[in-house]
View 1 (cartoon, one colour):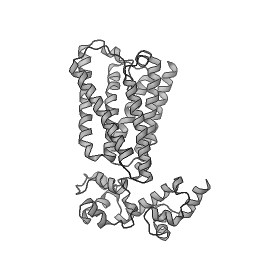
View 2 (cartoon, helix red, strand yellow):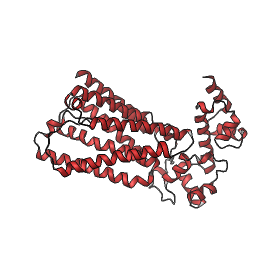
View 3 (cartoon, one colour):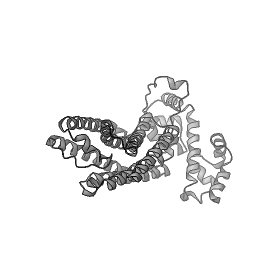
View 4 (spheres, one colour):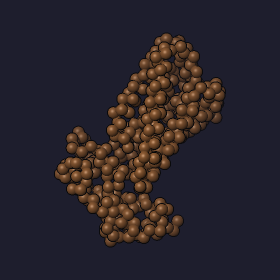
Length: 359
């Protein structure tokens, strides 16, 4: 078991790296950042517990609670990114799951003296047979909650991979990442099944847990990079003020402007987007300037340049000329690309294209 403890400590150390990476690079809404952190922290803390072979009761109770936290974080991440209309539903499910977990811990802790000892072989993803005679209603609620979470994840996966047909490389990246998340969900569900070898063989159970812990951390560490860049940049002075009230939802803007790649439209303009979002042009101008500290035109051009840099690394665009690439990202010609490229990236677009082709 010393080797297992060493592996747990390695996972703990990697969780610190992933957490720092998230804090430094990720600029999206605070709620989404919090959800990603809610995946890292329970995994890191649980890994530390098992690497040090700690026994205090509170540590093991935290490990059980972490199951609900991790499940809630995953379902809320996809709700925030692509299903804002489901946010209240997923938030409610998460609240119920975490509340039910706390109640279950309270019930078992008070009515089964051996409960804590029976927890010691469990991890966030491996459930051992606790041998508890709990009321049937608790078992039914627990089963319904697990079913609700996996059903919602399957629904999200179906819509993202099959129903949504957004033809751009950003969406392809989030789609591949989503499939990997779903694969993780299947692995966790498999470990929740009453398979004797996971419940009775401590070495196998901990090995499977270490694999899942690393899987979670790698998913966060290798999240699609464009998520980091679609930042809400607020000036230092404004960051100490209470968030202003806008006629426009932040998620609605992100969905239209980033997810649907509005900035690649040749006719992209403040007035045109305002009509799509059904708000006044002045309201949209205030929103963009407050959130991003730049004018609407600069925001469009900056994202076109960022998208240009993204697509030149995609084999699909390998044989495109610079003029064709410029039009692909929304510029009317390569001449209109040069000035924004120099402003937001520096150098010459042909130089970076040649460097990519030479690789």
